[in-house]
Image (tube, rainbow, N blue to C red; front, top):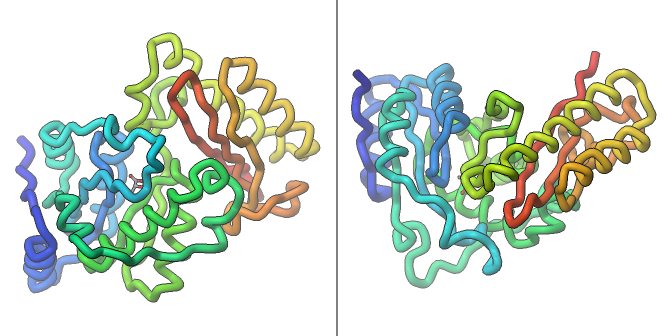
Length: 286
Ligand code: PAF
């Protein structure tokens, strides 16, 4: 039997819960999410429990990180199932504020970003996205005052943007990246995978296949430009329309020309029908 998760509806309730744990000498981890939880999120809770006594997961579908053309209104919302998953994973609480709590009337502040947020990857296709992410994450970090916060590596640029923002704004919470959890065939778990038709779902693994092959070939010393051109072809042949597929420095996200410029991460975003998938793989290095 799993214990139940306390639902905290506003910042005062969140702060009271965190204060109570701290008074008992417990460490606290925050797992920020937009709900529609899957095994990838459960692994973030597990990672939090390795580093803290208590995990609080937030569920907030953040309107400011969606462009008007994106899927905010149809983003999957599965709150009751999410709570059961959080309980099973061992979280103590779920912070689930309303839009009016996070963005009350008159709210007019946003975090301005350069560096990894302007790497010409996701930001090229979603120019307003990271300002929305960084602003809501700054709020969540300040609201929770946790010892650490766990973010999945699947959204690799997001992880780098959040880590830079927390560093630059002297937010004391440690930002921790956790490895991507994959389906049996290798497809990165994502709340958006539910949008895929059965036929698209079969094809979707090509993105991971191409990135893994590319990472292995770069590690083996093959010419980076050739390898990435082949990876691009492979993804197009599977039926994807590519937004980007690139090899970048794993820390700065700067462009790299050869293996020696690394550590390298290969990253891609591509559309299969109406569904946009992203993924990334580390290039093994000595
Ligand atoms: O990765 C996500 O689910 C979101 O971008 C986050 C970090 C919860 C901010 O809304």
